[in-house]
Length: 336
Image (cartoon, rainbow, N blue to C red; front, side):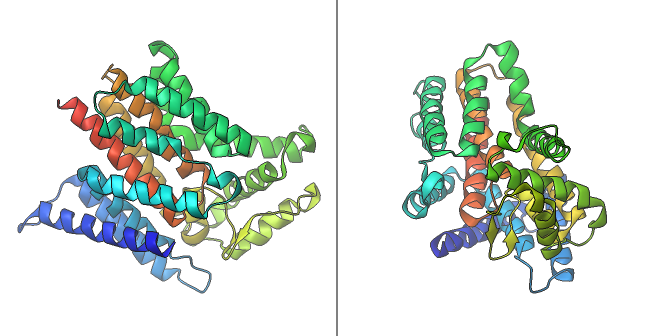
């Protein structure tokens, strides 16, 4: 993990350097860059205002994530190096379902390195293989990605165009499903046998986060959230509540940020992420080429990870580099 942290800091520094060089001596920046800079500054200020012994420094990691993404969009060579480093790390250090080989990364690298390859067929093959591996290992994010990506890649244009436009909103769909499922569960409309222990854990954390949100706008609940979630699931019989060094983890980038920094900071970055993905999707949705459709299908992968995974260093680097390289491939195709 130390190696990945070093890579993240180097990539972020290069991203910041590239931004400064692009602005030039007159420091003229566009509205999007200015808005991102303000969002980063506000996040850092709020992070220091709310800093205590329970802080995970997520406010700094958000800024690093933005800078790495900015570098990845402009310099695909760095994206490739980052993705290779992430794959090597995950394969060599992960255990159980987390050790499932990230074939979607390999699929994206294949499309970039071999521009003449039949991209759509390659994505379907890689995705089917990854879906089978995910089903056998119980990797939830892999199953969700596989089902959506296969649908986008294989279904008729009338259907997959609608699915592509849903990509930026996957998180909203996921949260709505989990909150509804847990609400039905605690109301005894859905039997406990329908849920795995992991499903109860995650749905209860998301349910409690949503219900607690109005109370924590400017400051995250942190350990208060942990005790609250434990109380909610006490009657379910689940004893394997996931915990890290910082307590329970909602396995969701935005909810993790909410837990640490409060609702306002989390809302800002939710809007930023959704706008970013919407911009990429809308900008290239009129391109009917199979290569574009293949990359769009793969874009589900970082969005699903953003939605179902904790904001660990390897996940942050993977998502930033994956989105950056995907955008570069799509934009190059658009201008070719």
